[in-house]
Length: 311
Length: 311
View 1 (tube, helix red, strand yellow):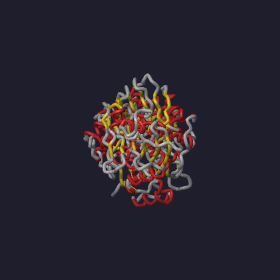
View 2: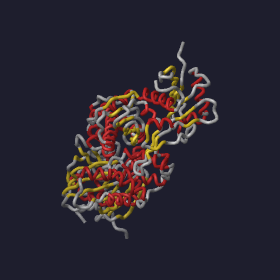
View 3: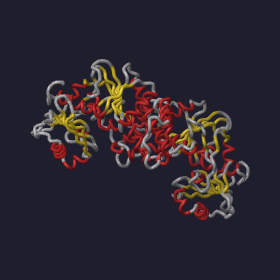
View 4: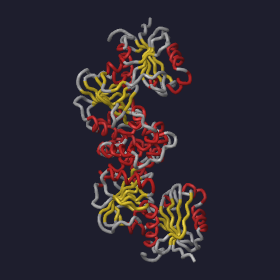
């Protein structure tokens, strides 16, 4: 007999959705993945999309639902207003906004806003990964969450002090597709291996320049003309340059913490960032990004009284 | 009676072409502009496009022609091989490659290659602007040539020591059109005024970060969400950030020279870069980019013996 789910948890982004049924301890009982992110859900209706996935997993009508991600943005289902940092992680989770007018208890975790005149920034979704990253309750920790828009978060004594965004994944994609570098990388850039000497070299160059990457972008093109750089290696150059630049820049902004950097990532990205953090001389430990978001959603359900106390 | 032309001079780029008839002193007798850059000319035939423009200006069949720009690249009419720097400017101009098999004397000024392992770079066209920028024959000079791919050139005693490329114009265009910033800048970004406080603020931020601009790109988006930044001002932010970053980065690479920076630019770009150089604390003098390329082409014609000695 399968155990009874305590809550449904969703990471609902712009283009994708992941849903799980969790028991009271946060253990996964069922999983669904879909392309019906908020862009699709705005057309079909958020409630309909959600119920479809819950039905498919056999969730009871009374099961509460906790959601994080862009579904809580102004363009989403309802806006779960940003919590302004600095803020304790527990207080952020407890700020989940309830969807009114439905019998089912559905809540969306708020995003974070950094309201600094010189460094305004926002996140939505990563705050939940952060809550599930298993950070020690005490001490200062620097968390790196790589992706399309990489986030670096400074956490002290279980509270978010501040954070920053480096659009590294988006820059790679936009430059590879729409800039002169498309001639260097070719139509379908090869996956980048962390062991590539080109990745390492260009990462070290960016680290040496303190995050100034724009001065080196055209050099990738020139290396093709003058040094016979091949297209698969050009992708490794661009990846190394952008990731190295991100790390150099974040290191300068946040300083080195005593504790190892907490790298919240999965798969190839975890390997590339691990290699680059090593080149930057930063100790790190990796937390799986998928596990972190599930753990964070379970924690949010607990903080909002949707399931029983801590497991 | 109109004076007799001594040479036809062309700046023949990827998408555009400008042609002049010059007298023996470099004075302009006629001018043509066309959209038949090398992309179009590869289809129509370079000789045919050239003769069409020469005919329209009433050039005699025997008039020699000097050309600079991408027409001399591997994808151009013929490849005028790169001259490797360091190199004296006179020697660069004298390396013009002749088109064989035509009765008319047609030569293309070579581009420059910087064959450094860590900083490979190329230029084609800007070397001619540089030759025509009226630099003093003695001393060290730093030249800034802004554009799609901005070039900074270190010149000492009339020789190019080295140079670098910052793809500032391309980054603005690619990010405005294809990145998340398109939501911030709107469909048709407003022209940026050098007097805009947003241009100034974001330029100063980039200068303060030593050329690290990627850490601040997403902040333009966040400023729209949190600080009600309007789209016309967002374009000024992006422009200020990228130009400030270019200047900070070039300043770090080449150091400050005793002589003022020579800014080779025209129109709005000259004004924006002038404002940004001022914010960076760099003295500068402006040379009109159109005049510089014509003067450089006339000088190239003289150095190759196509017209008489210096005027």
